[in-house]
Image (cartoon, rainbow, N blue to C red):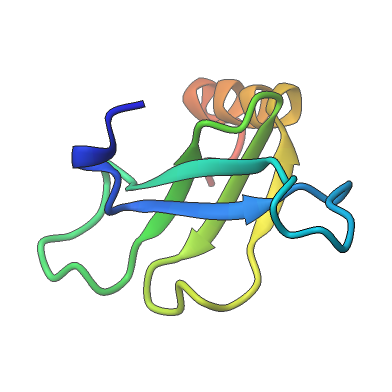
Length: 89
């Protein structure tokens, strides 16, 4: 990984990490704002990339609050339904 461009990465220790802090695996995820985000930068959905099989989502206004995480297959199905207009009213 190129650490020169790692400022947007949120690192999380493995849930299997024991008490020995020196022998842990950390997973990094890069957060990206939705392409539909307005120019004000305040009310956006952000999606993390880099965690295989999982799609974490957060509100850009509160990045330190809890996130929602979906299995990648469920997220893909949601996006497909969205593109088909299944949620249009």
